[in-house]
Image (cartoon, rainbow, N blue to C red; front, side, top):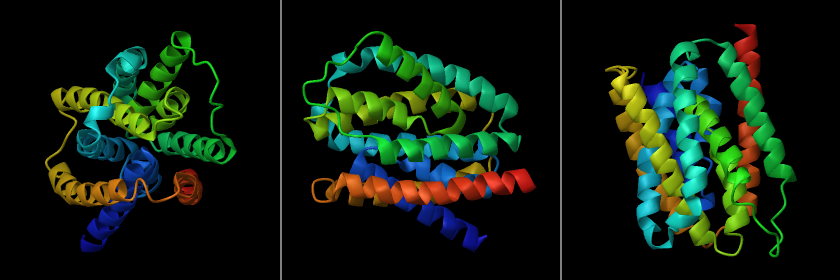
Length: 248
């Protein structure tokens, strides 16, 4: 039990540090390892609940940089997607096949992280159908696996390529509101167990420490190198997750 809690603490600490530095990554890191200990449903509920606390912590520190008018479309679509993710996780979250799907998605994200290039400064950003598609996708995947961040990262990097504080602040407030929807729906549906509280408290301490350290290093560390390190860790864990799910 002590070893399990220690592993959970360290995984969540690393994930929250990555999010504090780069704006996202907590769900990717956490969901690469936690399904090895729990079901996808249990892992997602723990990560989403902690992501809510983590994102609130970071958003409050960057609150003055939030630009509400620019995120209303993608946020509205994301909230709809989260409702769809809730139903899928509720009915199929205990099945191991979801671990395979999760592993495939995580590897796809790794490929994206390594191949993506910074947006061109003069590129024109579509603010109608693009945020709707990305919001629905991010909301759905986030509601199922708590790893919908890359959809929002892609869009906000286009919008705020010259302002990393606005990028991170608006990303975090999006995470806050979408996570709140997921936690509320599953809470009303009775999906949280009493044993969940112990893991949540351990994780709470972990993410508060990790996020504060990450935000402190936000202006000092290279985000590109941090993302590469996180991508390598996610790739290894995702491969192990898929192999384990297929062999069991």
